[in-house]
Amino acid sequence: MTDRIRLDGWKQIAAAIGRSVRWCAYHRRDLPVFFLGSRACCWEDELVEWQDAQRYRRREPRAPTPSPAGQPSDWDDDLCTHPDRRDELIAEVVATLKQALGRMVNR
Image 1 (tube, rainbow, N blue to C red):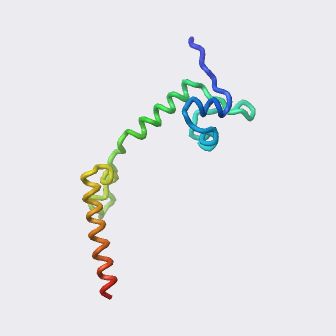
Image 2: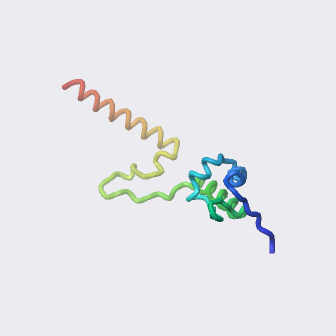
Image 3: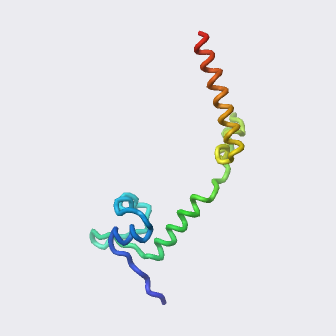
């Protein structure tokens, strides 16, 4: 059985993940920490697993969600994540805003 390394206190936890003590204390509910009395502690291997999961989660594209009834399929969540589609969406929004502003000015 391997010996687990316990990180005692926010300073050690923060140093292990490259964050500030304040950030770690603020995000304590998300981190795999436990408390011994009032002192925050964490197992190093659990912290590494947590950090890897966070990196993976940020890189993993979201699964497409079905469009709500009555809305065009252009409203998919990944519409803005594809550069080609993003430019298309921006052009549509700009055109719609120009039309709306034109109608407001002509009143």
